Amino acid sequence: MINRDTKKQSREISIYLKNNTDESDYPIKLISMKHIIFLFSILWMFTFGQSSPLMAQSKTEEIVMMPRDKEIVETILKQLKTDQKLETGSLVIKVGQFFLGTPYVASTLEISKTEKMVINLRELDCTTFAENCLALARTIKKENPTFNDFVSELRFIRYRDGKLNGYPSRLHYFSDWIYNNDQKKLVKSLSKDIANIGIDNRVNFMSTHPESYPLLKNNPDFVKEIAIQENAISNRKYWYIPKERLIEFEQQLHDGDILGITTTIQGMDISHVVIAIRKDGRIHLLHASLNFKKVLVSTETLEQYLNAHKSTTGIMVARPL
Image 1: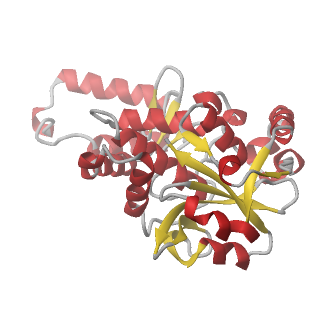
Image 2: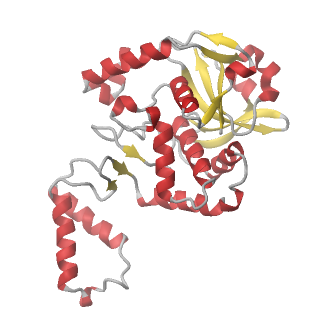
Image 3: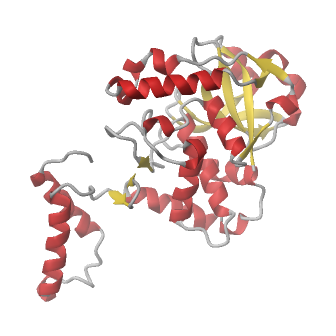
């Protein structure tokens, strides 16, 4: 979708017009000179460096998406319209269940040399799954929700203080995601209220492994900016629920709570993101699973999942508001 040559771009514009034009409105034999000029101007715009056919461009950003993504959003908004009075957490569960079976695909946001507002509901990783579920749940609660409302909610959730301003503005560390979205009053960080057990949350993985992140590898200035953010994150106080004590506090978890699974991996805070869902009185995981390569509800409980992975230490809890 980026840096296409002119010939390929022209062919894709033709496909785009074919797929997005009602043939009854534009029959070839009745096409007027006005239509020819209009279509030629569109072709000229795309050929000489404007946005790609799959990018909706505003004055401040490019939204990268496929037509199917908008269809998915509008289908969910329509199907769950009558549920808008439910609590946000309950809506997060309903939205999450809509995505059951959706393929797990990593790095769906890393598709460009610059940061774009990526909308992809066809492929999800653990973080984008949770973000999209929260954004859709919040959108459903609006009086007359639209696709643009969803885009605004997702942007506000994904970026520091809701502002897309380059790669470092994305909330890369999930403990920072919880902190900033608590500040924005989109979620309530509840780990302290539930367990009041502190955790040493020192992060530096991104700045010490820039080769693992294309936009860091190619932009040394971003590494410096990320390092400053890591220092700020590391100097905050954080709380968690240790996995050894989960059983004490499990009943205080609600359906729809967004959980960051803490880890012993050096320089990282959270190794996986899941949504809490209760089955037979126990908390299970509604998540985009790397192991199973799709969105599913785990057969194992949260406690069993944590105990089965040596590098996990517990959970941080964010409750949708």
